[in-house]
Length: 354
Ligand code: KG4
Ligand code: ZN
Picture 1 (tube, rainbow, N blue to C red):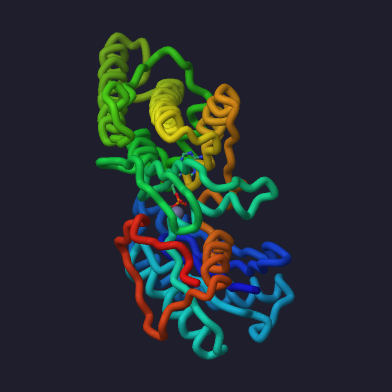
Picture 2 (cartoon, rainbow, N blue to C red; picture 1 turned 90 degrees about the vertical axis):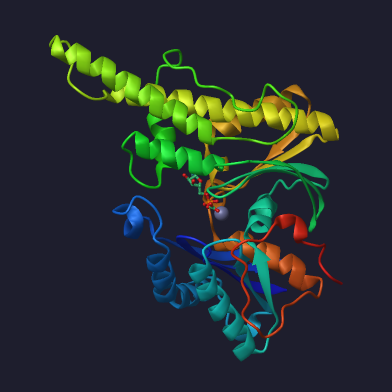
């Protein structure tokens, strides 16, 4: 079965062609980062309009790269939620209409199920059951996965998602949007012992997260360092404001606190469930330190960690084509209406209907 995947839930237009026999045939991505950079974050209306401009040309490009004509497609999968409503509607309208025109089935995919299954696009795939740590700009969740559509939510963030905390702290440090990867780069130059941030909610039982306090810790560290800089500059010892080294030290302290917190909660969830396989997915799973720390953890307990290649950690069409293909292959499809769900708990999903 050959499936066209369309991802437009936020600020990336991702298109891919996935074949259940031959694997991923092509994938194309257009990032709107430059469009939103001046605003310091995603402007929903601009995002929708850019998806309108980019989706069809990218579909043509992806089909050509996959050497596939529309009559060779067996279905179309598009992200139906969660995400920005206007952005979702663009992908859903285009996907649903093309499927109608080409007389093939369509399926609305849950964006986080796409992330969750992204490691299945790699050579080494996890068997079920496994524990999944989903860390993106909108979600931080620990999920027990017993099969496609069999998800038990073990814990989640009660406030900011991990990626959101990365982005907000990066903004405080004066880094451009999207801040997460930039903060991670800056942290490479940081000195480890200068700042110490809390590991929120690790001193009590449970698997929930809270990251908004870390942003405040970073804001306080920045204010403190600035104050120090100002009093020193009165004595002519240093220039006003934050030095690059101080920024890097704060970035490292923040990243270490997030990574430690995620590792502590993963260890706890693995112990609680007795699982030995861990999947990390979503934009923050591109973070090298997080991958390293979780790989160490899994080696220590004799388990295995799985994650998608870097470009499939963040939003992409391949994960949507794959998740959609799993459901379409089982005979599931949507009716002719264009429906999206900006909010959509993943635990509402069911195994593919046969
Ligand atoms: O999954 P994703 O592309 O979009 C959502 O579904 O939200 O995740 C984007 C998030 C952003 O918050 C971004 O800053 C973060 O992932 N991110 C990172 C890294 N790469 C992307 N955070 C930390 N380190 C990275 N290397
Ligand atoms: Zn995402």
